[in-house]
Length: 78
Image (cartoon, rainbow, N blue to C red; front, side, top):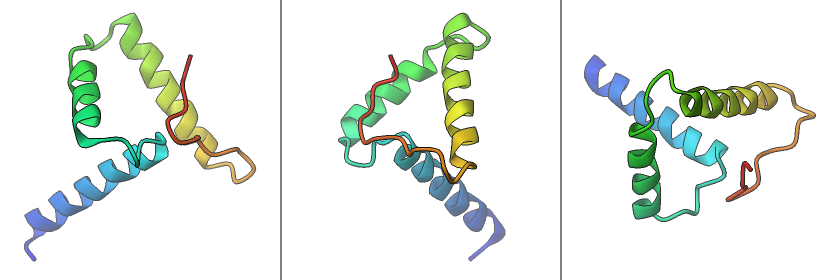
């Protein structure tokens, strides 16, 4: 396997882990793609961008704490 293919495979693995961490491992592919397309429409630096980024940072931070509860499958954020 070339270095580029290894890098690409690792990136896909990490992105899949984010889907699992978000509690969306059982969500349909079309739903996930639609959600990602909506996220791509969020303007970088906007209030919504920072709000979503802060949610993600908190989940990553909590996942480093073994006593922290895990994200529930399809959990709502609001």
